[in-house]
Image 1 (cartoon, rainbow, N blue to C red):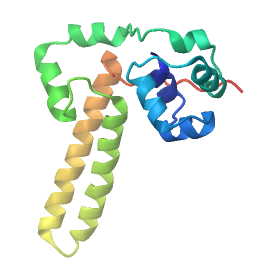
Image 2 (cartoon, rainbow, N blue to C red; image 1 turned 120 degrees about the vertical axis):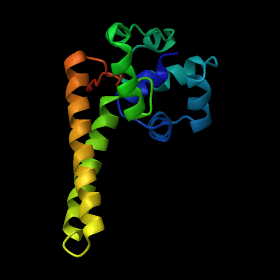
Image 3 (cartoon, helix red, strand yellow; image 1 turned 90 degrees about the vertical axis):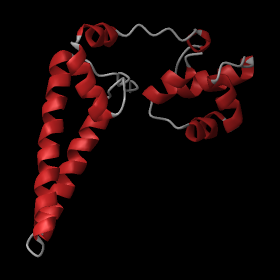
Length: 156
């Protein structure tokens, strides 16, 4: 079922969806893992997610245009992204978190460098790491290889 994709696109946790729909969390987990849902459960979920019941009954079919971009990349660049993001399917959100974390910790360590040379060296290494990941993020944007789920915002 496509329920998990819709739930994630709305930024709902299983617990939030269960609470809003009046269903048990375990029921949501079963439906997402492929078990058949009752008509009543589908009606509750469709109402909360603002979709048709037929949409929830669709099989999960993912046609990812990014896959073609990823497959066309040279092996050395795939290795670079895979090793740096520790995933064979890099996500832009993860890259952005790494850049932010590296910048913040780098600046903090550089401040500590006023008292310790080792902290200053660590700060400079973290800042270098941040800029490296920023470069990789830019390359990922340029080549369109991110596997993040497309963000959809509910219509008001």
